[in-house]
Image (cartoon, rainbow, N blue to C red; front, side, top):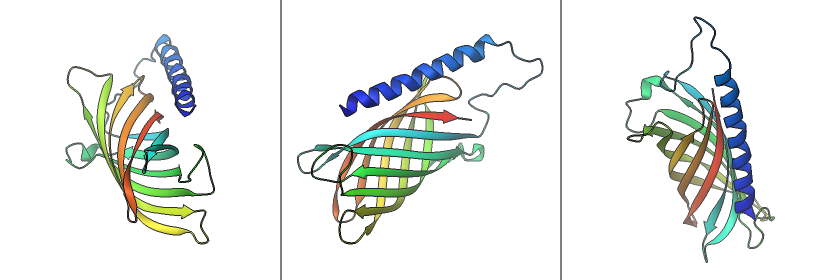
Length: 192
C-alpha cells in the first residue's frame, strides 16, 4: 500500500513538473532576460520525501515522512563536506503495528550539510551525500524522551526541469539507545 501511494505521489509531481517545463519552453524568451542555469551559484530547495524505515527486529516497514528546506551556497561548491545547508523535520512511526501512525512515534528536527555532485555523461541525473544531526523526540510513553540524532544519506536526483526534481535516497540513521536503522525514501523537490 505505501509503495503504491509513494509511486502515485511521485508520478503526479513528475507530471506537474513535465507539464510546467513544457509550458515554460513553449513561451518565447523575453529579449535580454536572464535565464536561470543550474550552475548559477545558489538555489533554494523545498523537499517532501515520504519513505519507509526498515526497523529492527525483523525489518518491519514503518512510515517515515520528511519535509525540509535547503540552500546551496556558490562559495561552498569546492568544499568537500557540502555546498547546501539544510533543515528538515521527520516523523517516523515507531509503533509495533500499523504503517502510518501509532501512539509511539519519533519527531526529528535536524540540521544538515549536503554535497551535490554531477555524474559523468549525464545532466539529467546527479548525486548527493547528506550528513545530518539533530534532536529526536520519542512520543507515546509517560514522558517524551529526547535523544541525539545522526543520519548519513546517499541519493540520486532526477532533474525534470530547472525547478522540479525527484530525489531517491537511502539513509543510515543512529539514535543512542536505538539500534541503527535504514530509511528508503523517494520525494519531490521544488527549486528556485
